[in-house]
Length: 480
Ligand SMILES: Cc1cc2nc3c(=O)[nH]c(=O)nc-3n(C[C@H](O)[C@H](O)[C@H](O)COP(=O)(O)OP(=O)(O)OC[C@H]3O[C@@H](n4cnc5c(N)ncnc54)[C@H](O)[C@@H]3O)c2cc1C
Ligand code: SF4
Image (cartoon, rainbow, N blue to C red; front, side):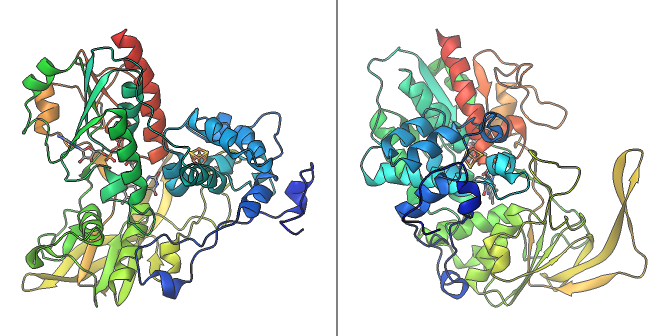
């Protein structure tokens, strides 16, 4: 059916096929760090929105989306061309839909009723189209509070969780000051996620809006050091810790001290700074140019390293994962409407790399002071006492040469920095900040709250947004 002359009827999900945004050509996109997607038309989005069946029990928002975005409602408004209504519906549950519209793994689409044997609605793309329409038309304006309550709040950390808390509490009339130890605002949105996945003007235009709403941002301030915990406690009624989960998981094997072995976030942060035209001293430069690169860790951060290394001109790229290769389609232990365990290829994977599964790295080897590769072995997984365990497969030992080795194995917990230690907050068994029983409230220290990855452990932007939105209501009630 042509997109231009579709009508909404209850068979649209069969008449109109799911179509995702298309990627730019690989050879073109690996020459820059710009958005990897091609433009779309309004009719394209409307026809995709018309596939939504407005079903009785929308698992997409009740079960799938952590923000409980009102998906069938905004789909219907989009189909009818009521973009401003769609925007209001979207903003009623989400502060920054343009960010989830780009980087969210679309948990909602997994739970879409059409995903039960058919193709889900392209909810994430529709979300992005709505919010971009809002920006294009100048509908996204500062919303400063009508009056101030006189209460002062310090938000420590300007990642997704900190930004949502700051915006909500400021709009509720409290005076909000954000402290960020990096030189720019955004947390991993700024210095983790590469520009080709999300260009940084997306953050900057929101920061402008938030400044106009009255929020004060202080960068290059390492709270706990540059401003003491005592001073914070004296100056603010409430302190919110949104410091992220940033202690990277290390691989303390023989040879770890060679040059050329780096944590993924160190590499990605530097690359994002270069893209932002910051000068990187030659002695500190980490580049994949003309190098063989090994990325250890099969997740999304690893994929971001691959896309970055490809753009820097890497010769060969390998991604090694200790876990088995996931099945090509939904595994039986993750039935609908759960998020499916299945093989996923990111845009970076499509740009060229070799992925290997069931690989255990045994040691790093090098020449003089420089890393030259890894020794690895294949493993096989088995179940023991209801837990998965692995053993090495004899005779499968191998060596793989590389000049740059990136460790992308996730994060163990928030850094137990001077800030957290001086603050005296308790940690849970995993080393995350412990909050009251539902994980949505105060830390063990009166007037000190925490949200996002610092509480939940390394997770997703959408979870940080949802946690922060709910916590801002808790704090607002507390201040009353
Ligand atoms: C490379 C990479 C790619 C990712 N890609 C995706 C993706 O595509 N989709 C997705 O949903 N999620 C993704 N994630 C995960 C997502 O970015 C995080 O879950 C999210 O950013 C967590 O938000 P947060 O606000 O809790 O913490 P963070 O984003 O980690 O922000 C914490 C902030 O606190 C600051 N801070 C810490 N201590 C102090 C202090 N003492 N004083 C002042 N400031 C301090 C830090 O500098 C940082 O800016 C990715 C993560 C990484 C690392
Ligand atoms: S935030 Fe994520 S899960 Fe929620 S509607 Fe958007 S894409 Fe779906």
